Amino acid sequence: MADHHSIVRRQMGAAGHRYTRGRQSLVDTLATIGAPATIPKILREAPHFVQSSLYRNLAVLQDAGVVTRVDVGEGRAYFELSEAVTEEHHHHLVCRECSAVVDIALPTRAERDLERVLDDAAQGAGFELTEHRVDLVGVCATCRAA
Image (cartoon, rainbow, N blue to C red; front, side, top):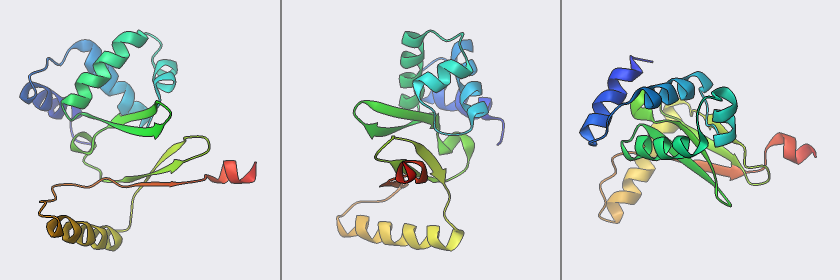
């Protein structure tokens, strides 16, 4: 990953937000986790965060396009650094039983085909596609085995 702090600082400034030490620490924590993480997971990884501040800072980082929120239903969500920061495009597998979220990258050819299909669908609706996110919902191997 490129120097993620310079990318985040630029995006935060463009969105009118300050890139405080606490937000830098949160970005570092998400980078260290390296996968979608729940609030409890973030707090276990970095117990110095105060939960209420964590929620506020995640909202600010999300507003600036630095963090992506993956909603899994029933008020549960996972958070990860956005593709603008990681410079790695991916999608998610979401388990409808346990709400686990796993990153998945498609082979280049499949990604190109998907982009073309989605772009055609968007254009058919008079919409200009600038990016896409796909969450595949199903049941994970652990839940299937239970």
